[in-house]
Image 1 (cartoon, rainbow, N blue to C red):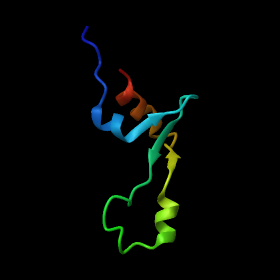
Image 2: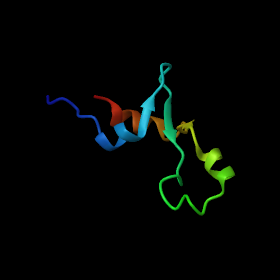
Image 3: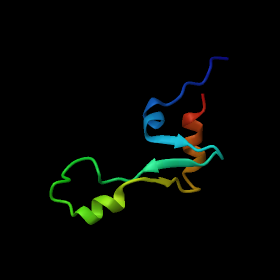
Image 4: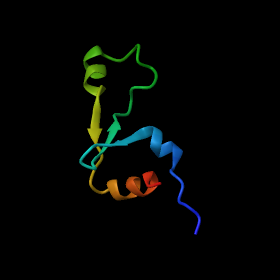
Length: 64
């Protein structure tokens, strides 16, 4: 059987914590930031946990 390859797009967007949870960036922070309020930009910073419904699908993409 051939080896399963890691999905490179998912690899760039998600990371697995030490306990096996998945972390992701928030959306809406890539462009058109000059017109965005500073308060909103601060709130969108940092990483958040992936929902339980999406986690198995993403883990499958990350399995290598």
